[in-house]
Length: 97
Length: 409
Image 1 (cartoon, rainbow over the protein chains, first blue to last red):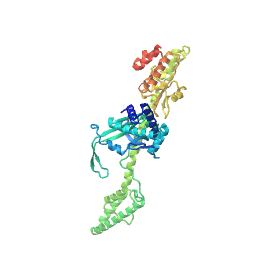
Image 2 (image 1 turned 90 degrees about the vertical axis):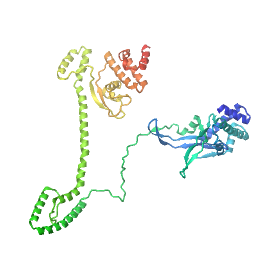
Image 3 (image 1 turned 90 degrees about the horizontal axis):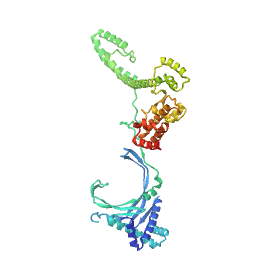
């Protein structure tokens, strides 16, 4: 499902136009981004939580350079699905759908 | 700091930013959630612009291990919900660390197989016996010999006095032959010199071992110093030989061009030719041999020997057989500094400069094409139309084509 189909799905659920849904979706994504930028965890019930994770620097072997490389620390945006959502999709194989 | 906001706070903030009521904001957020779920059910993948991609990943059945008990268990095949943030979100979240890059660590030094042991307070290092301990050992040995000899002497008394005289003679020989620790007068002469020698040798062994081991590093250092001397002498000879001839060749060049002083120079050359060996015209003449220092480059070397940085290309040309990329001049590189007498009004000297630029071009051509072409252009400027004609084989096809465009213009 691409973004336009996603917007259509939203508009069908709230009975609005695609243009309105697209604008509101953009505002909501901007709000989420703002929260993540400030390292704030956002919880949406029955869906999951958006948050950030800090990964410390590490030393690992790089096969391209054929030498040990020290990687710098980084901060990642993460999504942890809710338990109910995980359970819902856990055993749905791609063949069965 | 782990900050969290509740769903209600999210709704309130969203309603403030979007201008909708709280119920409308709540409805929109729920619709957003349900649309993602529906997309995962339908296509197993949902793309939300500006946020990321939600995806279902099917993980096949595999054998796992219970980390607590260590038992092997079968993990069933299942779906995993993945979230891949967009590049803009990633860079925004990682803004504080984005400028950092990875660094390649140098090779670790080879560690010795047997680590050096630190001395504990309780453990005492093994030390060679001091003089006091040696004396104690000598005394112990002397006591042992006294005991042994008392038994022997008792046997000798039975035999007679002749054996004692023989023993005394033997002892006198032993004392004259060896440098041993002084024997107390009360100690009777030993019956067997060999046994006494062996006892003394056990005490001396550590000292003799130390003496032999000390020679090896001295021998190695001596060999290395001899080799270095040979190398220095040979290099000095290489530098000295041309120094004898420069005035002759310089005068030969001036003779060709200037006619006013020709007679004087011819006379001088005739005199010098008798004493100095004749060199070929094309053979380079070296002014000096220079050992490059750390962070030193051809500019500073040329300034030192020629008074100007411009002719650094001649130094590179003279040493192009040992040098690679002109940008990297390693420290402690021995460079031969050629003798220079350049007059750019003369075509022959311009050709020499063009050839020097060409050698630098060849040095750069493997690593840096832009710099290589820069020097190729300089060669062309100094010797127009001659570079492509006379040195076509030394120039790469692409660079020759590039140069030909400029030559036509």
